[in-house]
Each structure stands twice: as structure tokens, then as C-alpha cells.
Image (cartoon, rainbow, N blue to C red; front, side):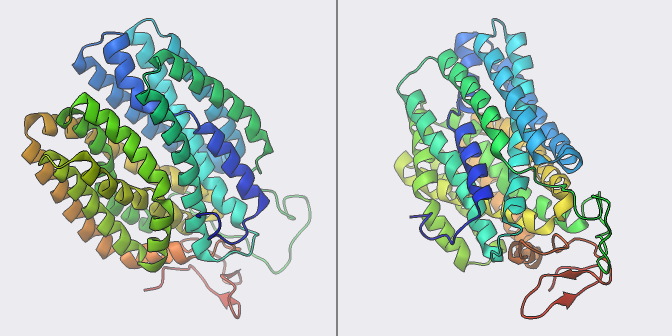
Length: 427
């Protein structure tokens, strides 16, 4: 259903989607790392919490590094290296004999996995740039990226629910990532790319964009406005692991993955009709309500679909917005900066959510609702900037709405060319 609603997408996009789909087919490290540490390696809970926090911080560093490396070397090499290192690190986790060795492998995995996923995001606008597609198609393309990832989450959650050995599952992920690294050779290079002037010729009457290597303030505003919703997502599983019984927790992992896949068409239709900033604000509130329902003893089947559908909006829409804000040739820096901010708050939420839920379910619910209110206020304040980023056409020669262009550079060709200088978001 989701694919039938989309216009024709370029072949480069489908190649990229096949690579991401294979890379996400086996997803066992993130959900089962605590089980590996607690059960198989018999590590104490405080040590496990420290390893999980270090892994999330490593992932935060990974997206920041990947952003700069992508702009310098191109997305494909970064993605290939990230996949290869992820495979090696997953194999190390599967074979780790001690907590110390598992901790090292987990941190390497955090850096590598975050880097290849960030590089894959920058390939989406690169694949769509010359496809003559409307701005809204970018959001649908990112939705397909998430959908392909979630298909793997369903398969992984099902295998885990059936009781497969943790070491075997993680070893299978290592093999899948290695195969994905080989398949990644079919991808386009992404940005930066050589143009006519790079090849020794000159392109008269066209000025190159004056690129900012430090992201514009607009990117920081969007990143900070989305941060409360990100915290809600990441405190969900850490907090619910304390609030729920083991059987219910396994059930929400599987149900969450199923709803992420089946709910994609519904979320895609809703986000086409609702302004992006308002959709994100509403999703944060819905996510908080779902978590509060768990804290107040609501049935799992009632709460999980609510916060999972909200989670889909928070995963898909900001990626499309950042791709619209980012100049093409510094897309990696923009994506890396945005994800680094989200990773930092996610690390804090992973720890604080567990501590708060263990201390008081009521406090956990109140904290979730307070975060949602803060996020709703922030997203409403920057809603025009968010919508501008989402609406930015993907084939602008300048790159994106926050790109600094020369006075003769033409961008956003509509009914007639629009000549701009130092473009700013429209209000």
C-alpha cells in the first residue's frame, strides 16, 4: 500500500533502499545487548547500565564523525566502512568471553552502526536531486527508509520472542552486515561530486554556493526543538523494562515492531495533511500519553499502538526536514550535527528513564508528560522553519533553503526562476 501511493522514484533510491533493508534485516544487538550482559555474562546491573550508556555516547560520536567524513569523502565510503566495522564489532560481541571485551565491542558497534546509518540518510536527497520530484516526495522517501528498517525489526523481534540463543542472533547480524557491506558497492557516491569545473573546464555565469561548514542556527533550533520527543522515545524501553513484567516487555518489543510496519501508510497519509511542526508536537504528546498509560497500569495492547504510531512521526519527519535545510555539499555535517544532538539527549534519557521508573511510576509518567509539553511549545515556536525545510524542493541547484548562494545563483525553479541572495526561510 505504501509503495503504491508513491510516484516513480529513481533507480538510485531503490538501490539505496535495498542496501539499508539488508543491513537492517537482523537487528539483535540493540534490543538484546542487555540480555547478553546480564544473563550470558552475568554482569551486575550497574555495570550493564554503564555499558549501555557508553554505547549510546559512542553512537553520538559516530554520527558526528560520519557527518564530517561524508562531506569530505562521500557517503558511500563512509557507509561501507561503517558496515564493515559494525560486522566486526557484532562478531566480537557474539564471541566476547568477558564483560570488558563485550564493552569494547559494544562501543565500537555504537560508533560504526551510527555512522553507516547517518551516511545512508544523506544518500536520500542525493538520489532524488535530479529526479524532478516534488518536495513532499522526500518525506515519503524517508518513510520508505524507516519502513524497510522496521521490516527487519519485526523479523528480529519474532526470532527473539521464539527464544533463539543471544550469541547466535548477534553472530547472524554480523554475517548480514558483512553481506550488506559488499552490496553497498552498487550505491551512488553521494555528495561531494565532481562537476564540470572540477574536471578542468569552466562553467560561465554560474557561481558556486558559498558553503557554511558550521550548520546554520536554524538547524540548531530544529535539533533542540525535536530533542524532548527524542528523549521520550529513548526512555521508553529503558523505563518500560522496569515497569513491566518480562513477558509483557517481550510482547511490547514485538508489538512495537509490527505497528511500526503496519502503521507506516497511516502515518504517511497523516503527515501529508498536517503541518510538520504541529504533527511533531502532537506526536510527542501522544508518545508521552502512551508511556504514562503503562505507568498507570493500562493494558499493553492499548498503550503500545498509540506511542508507536507517534514514534513513527518522530522518526520520519525530522529526517526529511533536515535534508531540506542542509546544503547538498554539507549534508553530512548537517545530518551528523542533528543526530549528535539527538544522541546526546538519548543517552541521558536511557539512563534517567530507567532510574525514574524504578523510583516511582508516577514520577515517570509526570516526567514524560512534562517533556511532551516542553517539546510541543518548542516545535510550535519553530513550526515555520520546520515546514520550510520539509517543503524545500529536492532539486534546487543551491542545495537547500539554508544554503548561502551567490547573487546570480538560481534556486527553486518553479513557474519562473527565482534569483536569491543569502536565502532565508520564508515566514
